[in-house]
Picture 1 (cartoon, helix red, strand yellow):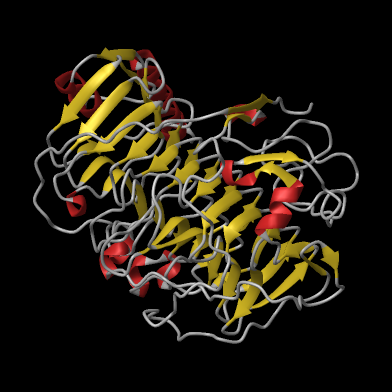
Picture 2 (cartoon, rainbow, N blue to C red):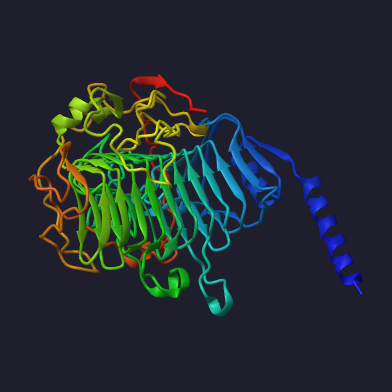
Length: 522
């Protein structure tokens, strides 16, 4: 009666034993060995790149053999950051199978034309449970691109789920001279993506509409988590229109490429919490476009125009955020806003913190936000991973309860800190802009400009003074621009262009200054 089941179970056990037996550490020292190891990879393999430069001249590096939950396929540097991949192709690693992990690599696009280096990682279709951890990615338009492929029944699009992108650095040394979309983490569709602890800076689009984002999840993606990231829109260079973090980005189309065959809402049940977002003077630090049941908790936004919650599909809550600029419900959005400090000024931030322009949020005077937050079940720790356990939550990304979190770079494992970035004087880009930005929504394909601000609701704080209602102080009130980039932003991530020849490598980012180390509160 049960013989077929026994045979199937036995076959599965043999297959798993075979995969385990094959698992191996594969050292590589040159490009040919790297490409051969990836092509031959089996579940459990760990491909280890020795220190050195690997200049790859081919269209893409295909990662198509599935790993497993117990035996992922790992590609890592023997010494973090010492294996330097230089690519002159449209995309680098194209991951189309589950359970791949990439760790500790320095990957640079070296195309002669910026439009010819699109992605360091293209994660598509069946590539669920991909992990991108501790890498340094630069010289691309969208370093990480996630989207579906028509591989389901009746050619329905299937999307990679449960992807983790954490503790990476993303930047470009100069604005990208392209009209293609420029967003370091550009995700269309997929469920339960986690963007955690990344350092994203200088994501500028020098051509086309000049609009770029640090990261977004859109295309009817679901249950995304964006937490503990450091975003500095202007550090090495300034200008253009640079937004911070987003659920929804500039919108998606056509419906067929999105989750469930429908692009609205652009995201469902997303959480954006405990992020530091700095020096995005031309636009908002957080932009929610058609984000249903969005939860925006405990973010600190310095020198941005605020938070926009936009379009009728957008619902949710905005609690415990500390920011310059306003929190706006626009174009039919309805959200609950409580315990936020809004419309703070540069002078107030300078009085509250040691050097916020240089990511040093050492507390000087916390009377306006310490112990004044709302208890939120979804927020149990802070930017540094320290527990918020003193009984009275603070407003903003950092909990000042003696655990020693002061900003700086995100650090894995719950401890954060050490290094700050930028000019030691605290002003890497010149005088921050505090006035109303001049950007408009004239290019937005989904709606026209909004000039009236609905204002805040419930208990908000303007410039540190309790008001019990909507803010009344005049401040930055510019509406966010939205990405009007071509549809290729959503459809597959890449156009059909020929590979370019290699250009000069980017200079390494110089890190300046140190903040004290801190450990996770146990």
